[in-house]
Image 1 (cartoon, rainbow, N blue to C red):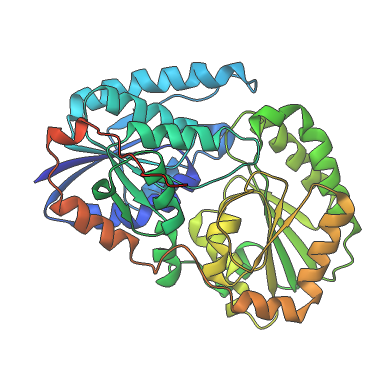
Image 2: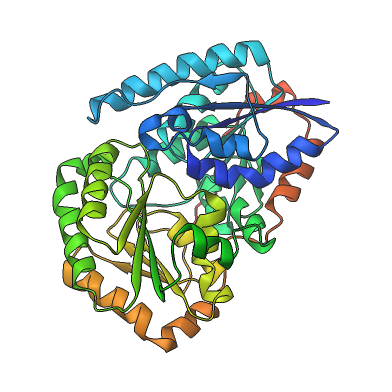
Length: 399
């Protein structure tokens, strides 16, 4: 039996990990240990460990590291704390394989710890591109170079990891995990959502999540002033805007304060710490399940790019945070300008032709079998120490 440990550090990450966690948990060939920490146990960002536990996943290893301040100098301090705490947990668990996701500071700390302890480490969702001024690209690619096994969401990402010198035999294109859950219809239905979010007299909803870009923290006030003005200018009947807290990156607390002010000022805006994955997907699926409600995603979360095509949901991405990411025809990119944002939102709710385009959107992130594919690879791969001796795969460039 293989001893596999998985780190989860925030709500978005857990939603992506869930299909694989389910497969690992029920496998008779895997002894699964979950490390839960960072943003999951931060009360300022919704204490989302409750969602993890609602799915039946618990842990004896709570990794308590989070930002002590909302300033950039907190980033490296928080990562260093995470490295120390994850190292301590892994020294007790002694896994054969450690699994880390994506490109955030929580996972970066965990992956540094495992790779420097000589633990075979698998990195999921490497190779993607986001050019929008966050640390994500550099962190993601650094994690790729440290990791030993790579599970990607698309062929373009696989090619980039090859460009980074990783051996082809250690790269597996399996798709985006959350597509498994969407394809299986594992989200809240219309009747639940109408009651929970008071949608009885609502015909149009916007699901809004705008995360901070740490190196642009000083611009948050201006950024949200433009978005607020755009929302106020909308002439859409029976509209509700459902806002969620941002992630815990530097600047997140400032955004939360802005959202709280919005909720008090506007009766068409409701704010939630976290919707949870089931409700988030269910709300965006209302275009398919409801005859009276039209839904749209607005913001800068990667979910607006990667998950909305599978839900055939219109998505408006504000700013540069997701610039360069693989996307489908349902996704519209717009700069942070009041008039431009307002026009694009109005078009989504008024333009039946674009809605039909969304319904025909092709999901570029896999076929909904990521969990099963990944489990089969993990069960069958030889996790010996040879994987720790990384070779560089040179590309033969020709003029």
